[in-house]
Image 1 (cartoon, one colour):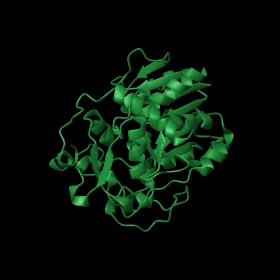
Image 2 (cartoon, rainbow, N blue to C red):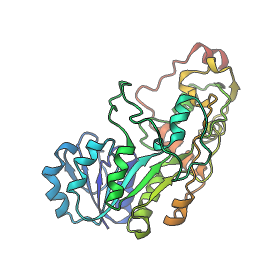
Image 3 (cartoon, rainbow, N blue to C red):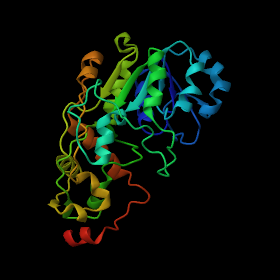
Image 4 (tube, rainbow, N blue to C red):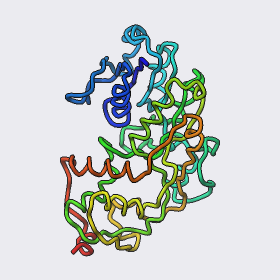
Length: 320
């Protein structure tokens, strides 16, 4: 296939591009040129901001894509700058599980939504969840982004928590920083919260399974691991993948270090049902341990530049 990827050089889009090229597809990556990987896969590049997409739309049409993947539309303005200028091709949008009402309740520390979440579950009541938080996402809302793509018969993939190589949030770092410091005891909370995750390679596999699939057009699909372990079990899986032995010591919530907040108690679980995607796309994710092992090995081999071993007093007291 001939595929245009909007974004595609950072994390999820980067893996999608790499897998497309490995599959033998011809890929055009449209991005700003700020995070272009060195010595990367062989694909075409087109540099532009979204606000200037109309100026390069002719080049995109000349590529004659079979499909367009939008990996980084965050606001309605992002969509309006691009979607009217896209050619008549299959459209695929990467969205998020934060559109669901359960996400809103979890952030408020209350419960109320039945689990697991399906594509028909209730959506958020409050818009712009990150407005006025000083993180540059005042206009972010996937609820503004999804409808225009669905109106064009596009496919919307609502992603669970994605981890893996090149993850800018380094979701395993709350354990791996202690592994690097050779901690033998790690303070945690109850760790019984459920939040569906998905390895970036499995997300990419779902994207590739969507391309060329006529049954996926106009559909909303949850993308997440088939079975989800609690955060305490996930912590142990990370330790096992790192081949590090440490005791998890449960401490009161007010003593849990700030980088371990996900191990505290939460009222609302965020558990996904991705069976619709697995059936419609014939998508068969590998066991979660495979993704955890690959991700942990990469992150241990590529520690962040600011990989701190400066722990709180509570952490020091428990780590001897």
